[in-house]
Length: 64
Image 1 (cartoon, rainbow, N blue to C red):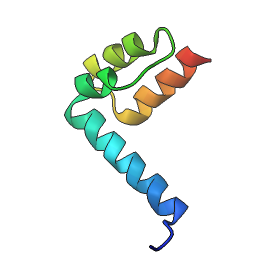
Image 2 (image 1 turned 90 degrees about the vertical axis):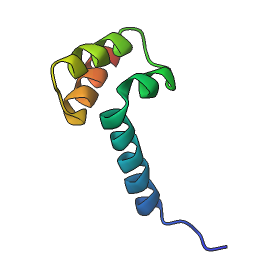
Image 3 (image 1 turned 30 degrees about the vertical axis):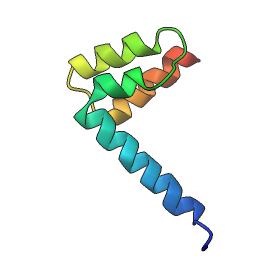
């Protein structure tokens, strides 16, 4: 079996995550555990038509 390239896996993970977030945020939130307040921040950000970069920035600020 060939070894997986770390950069390829990172890119694939990011793409799958972003696609899931963009297509079904509710189930993505349900499948993940978050620091207190992050789930509410995601719901708020998604209700304002934010993109995933804005959502992740908000997550980092709430988790800090």
